[in-house]
Length: 177
Image (cartoon, rainbow, N blue to C red; front, top):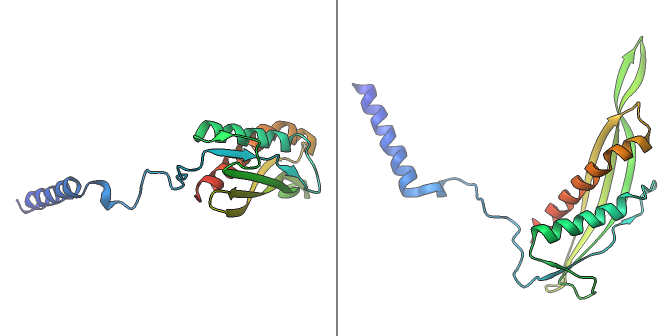
């Protein structure tokens, strides 16, 4: 009898809590953090330059194009090439390097098993309406088997590199406004 009263009491408390307070008791929100100011209408995405010591000639144009497409599809901004765009985005690939991250032992000898390609892009985004310039470094790593050459890994990973880096750049830009 005592247990059923306790369960009934807790049930009533829970129902009242959710009924009266709703979801406001939770610290989470489903509204986007980085909502753009309605006054921002146009965006210019300049070619992301490749100034890394090692240059993958396909990365810069593909990354720039993918970022432009993502902004067009996921925002209400209009692309422009004019210097007076409301939001001006530029970037530079500053690092493109490979390190060994995995080593295995075969017959008592250590051999490289996994390599990691790390790419860093320095991004500058300028809200020209507010004279507000922000900069950020976006970095992402991609693992590949040591049995592959860098050129083989690049061919296999290019789409993933472009997709992940453009997503991270987009999120960095539009989460801060």
